[in-house]
Image (tube, rainbow, N blue to C red; front, side, top):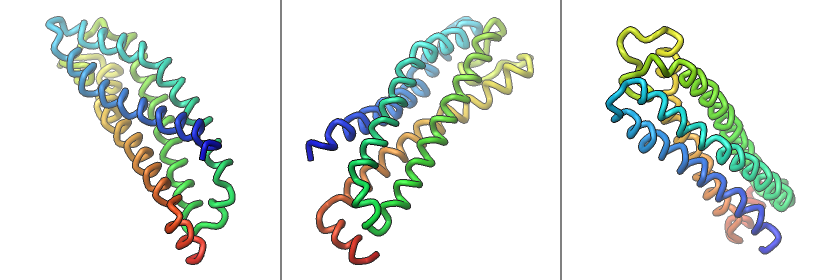
Amino acid sequence: MAGNMLARSLHDLSAAAWFGGSLMGAVGLNGAAAEAKDPKERTRLSTIGWARWTPVQIAAFGAHAIGGIGLIAGNKGRLSGQDGAVASTVVKSTITVVGMAASLYSGILGKKVGELSQHGGEGATEPKHGAPEELAKAQQQLKILQWTLPALSAAVIVLGAQQGEMQRPKNVLSGVFNR
């Protein structure tokens, strides 16, 4: 049990940071920035907030990868012998990589919004009428991504819980005998 504790802690805490940070950013940061009186401040403040979160997010992704690799290594025997364990790991890994890529793309879009923040917006992710096309497109994509990221990270957490349930002795035995 203690052998996987560090890996599991890195894995779970980093997924929690990803989920919590992305959800707070969508609801709290973008929501608060949208309340700024000056339309230019709406995009500027949101960009500053997300830029401050980025190093934490990168560290969380690194910790998640290290923890995930540690868990796979620590459970390789069970993975090869338990029905459904490999499929669950592949699905979860795929969602994680897609989520990380979406987070990276969101950062690229956020940088673009920051560079064009002098044009302002109705909100952090809502372009104002007459906004440059490049800014409007970036904001429209961010409006979708701000909700996609918490959904993807929530899926990773739920799949982690499902995999934890698969490790219960009765489920391991059932999975081995059903193979």
